[in-house]
Image (cartoon, rainbow, N blue to C red):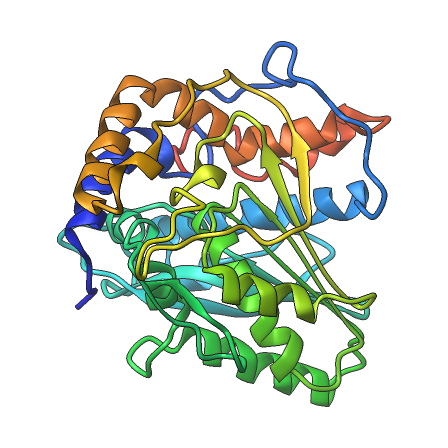
Length: 352
């Protein structure tokens, strides 16, 4: 059973009004009517961001495939080869599950192409995911030495114990691939909850996966996941061949959560470096001044619920992975061709 806190349950109300899900139902095309498209900064690879953005969308689409047609229907687009799909257990009382497996739903996949291995984590798409998003009390991150603390909810999904060993399942498959194939590069991606899982995976895979030349993580709309010690260790792992980029819509609420800069016991969050800003959607009002709440998590949660209810439509729009992808396409010389990779964004499903 997932462990949650009262904070998690209160913040779940906010999620229910728009933070959950990879795409909205508006199926926007273009940059949402005039969003800003910045020049690519030094070290940011637009082509790679688009490749990984497509794979982040594929992770959502695999959930729909499994729900509608079963596990054997799960695919990845050409030219990728699907190596493994990783499932998380779900309760069907609240969640949809695979057509042929009432206990599981895809949470990540591993694919290969040429010398490259790709790991893509799915974002928030059901009730259990939403609880995980905001089970924000921290516990130790034990996958690398001196890992600090990270959010309980994200670690619960990632697999900090043997009852839900998603992390070890992925790492075992990566070890198998690197020992049997000529793979040199590992790429990690995800959106929303998937971005949080990608944050957790980056130091784990960077230090614990042998026989790989480079590890590169690009994620989208990622929340903060850990404390200052986690961030320090994370950034200490980065190097020329261990690269981390987080792509953030400046109007997106989720990268602002959990509230950061608070010196609270087991609730102290900072972001890792590597931010690349894009802009689309509607600017949100400033968040409340949580520092004045003296680490009263109930008060903080209540303020976030009120804020979420008041801005629900804009929160959803500003968080859409489809529009993240579309905005990146508009930075290319051929946006219409790029848009062909927007997997699931025009199929009418609330989560692509």
